[in-house]
Length: 529
Image (cartoon, rainbow, N blue to C red; front, side, top):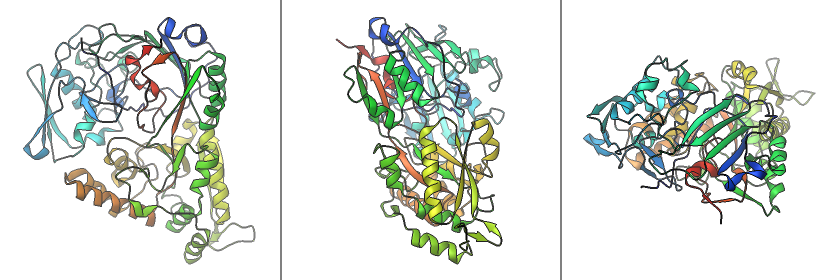
């Protein structure tokens, strides 16, 4: 039997904070754990859907599903449902995958190439409400050749395409009989992965059991419960009491467990950044001078030191400073004097109350952050404090995502994004003008022809040097015309009871906790001796 050791970094599209769970999530915690094969993890949010057709697990690492490929601990691609990496022909326009033999869905039906074709065609269908479909825009056609071969034909060469085939594959015989937007498959999924969903109590917990017929070998963790606990402090309290085996925590709370011999702290580097969206349609944030001044007014290093307790890095753009695609000449430091000169030149004059104004309009706007997110709250307050020193009045306001979402095309939001694998992943949806105002895609309604050109070049050329030059140009353009104020890249912190071995972390995307985390490879954990 082949033992599969690794699985890719993942994203769960979770757009809403949820209520704190009040009841015990399961039989794990202090009285369970390795002894009975159960693990209970505390996370802050739950997904809206468990269907890959709507975006769940699009970056891999779903415990219910598998993609053609996956990622190992070092973020390298490896075969999953495919038995080998793809054969690439026609100058990078054709990708051919051969499926692994003997793989079954959790309902006992065999995986075939037709399931792969169904998955991709449905995601790309205009009628399917998948906001990430632009990430597969290069696909011209996908077809099955027999039961075990899948051939993708691209409109143009797309260098990172193979990494996009970590997308989970769904069974046509189940999902094909339903509306992908409203069908029961969204909450009652069937996949080929190491775990099967057995219970989902919205706002409280999701419970999974090990798939004994998993093609990678039956997991030793027999029961996995993800307890939805929105409040950071409550999550830490429940972990300390033994009600949880592990949890995702902000750095300051993770630090309180450092002296605990029974628990271990894990720190994962990430592409996860915090930034303030500055909508172009707002009369204040739409002014380039205001955006440039804010970019120069913020003290990024202080945010890392004080808010993140050192668990992160300053963000000078969407790519972290240690990423090979990062443009080294875009690092910049606080310069209130230059911020003032930019505002003066643009006609934003200082007022008696310390707030600048132009043509009778004060330099004032509202900044929303999601309720219950202490890290975002602290970023928002620090941002407002820094902006005030430049004469810009930022009114910080907490709200639920249900309140924020209708306002984010006009009001600023303390946002979080970041994708792993390739600079095209995340940057295109964050910045390309064609996606302006498309839900959480380009929520600032940013429109910069130079950035659009760089994104298209980076997406279409296969020449590594040309791609690097394009993304360097993009990052420099963002300095001159920022659509967001990028603040920090956050390291993700986790604390777990020390009862299992085989735990590791990967470099993680923005979406974390539910799938990404030390439990990204939970199917491979072994009981500690």
